[in-house]
Image (cartoon, rainbow, N blue to C red; front, side):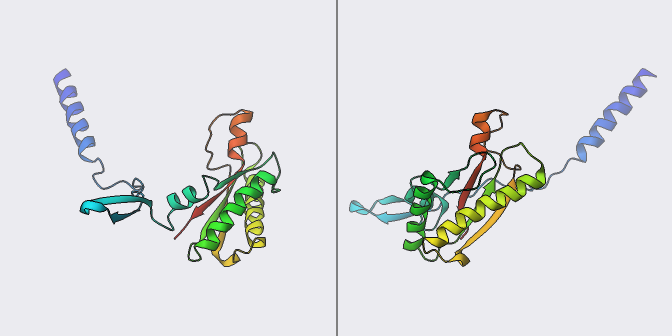
Length: 172
């Protein structure tokens, strides 16, 4: 009887393993960062940094100031945010074919609906500031993720401060 149970268990395990999914995963790792190259002296290829219009080029050009932060339950642009957005506006003026999406984010406190609305107000505040600096509104999209995409997973003041943000992301 024990042999019969052991045989059934082994066959059941083999059957379960044979049913495992063998196709590619639904999400793939990100593509490599596109870079530009040139031929240097002596014919060697020289890496000249990220490709113009890529997210990496944008972040490098604005000195990593593609993220602005907000106080609790606020969506106003303060002086630090204004400096970052001015840097972004200068980049967008220099590269008129680049379009961006501004993502509005919140911390984990509050209801889902409240945070989605607040994230939208934050993204729109950043967009309106850029438009006020001369960037064509048609080049800027907005989206609110509310509290759904935190960068800091803690439930403390420092984590919440990192999650109350608007992020500018190059989309072309």
